[in-house]
Length: 267
Image (cartoon, rainbow, N blue to C red):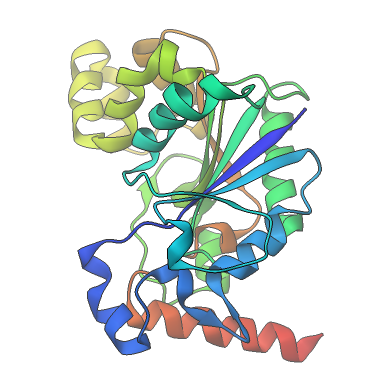
């Protein structure tokens, strides 16, 4: 099984304060130790078993001169835009990989081992092999709070777990052809999802409100009413909160740097 990786390295106006303080043009260029965020990520990704190509998306080659094994593509947009773009352009000129691993450039604590654990967790969730169309990385609140107590994340509360979104996903490129529109609704507009659930299954909304639905139940409902395909889109509770420790604010950069420094000193 082979994988392509897409590192989301675009720019957003909301990053301005952070970038001005650190005197860089993109979060991908923020420093962690003696390397930039993106250098840490590429070092982790290129060692994953089955990795094929690594794309730096939202950045052109003239923005960063590097000898690392990456392909630059300056198309900008969110995750869904990227998947649609790659499916309609890049993968018309070359064979599609089995899956695309998408990672935000502002999660510098990513390592090969953590990414491979996430992929293995996806595999185990679907009977020991990768066959879902879209696996979303989610982080258990207790794990996030344990390692990053001051990260100030927003959580969804279910019966068996409270989770926040991670910044990694695993997707079959073909999901854009078969379920592209509904994927946009689920990923981009959660309010629309809950409104639709209220129409399709009001009992599910009640269960969500009173924390009476499990992670498995939530996955089942989303796939039944939206994707209409079993195990099309699955939320996966990752084992490593580092995959969800993104840097949007100055205080989060401080958290990541302190965590990294402590890890290095303990080795």
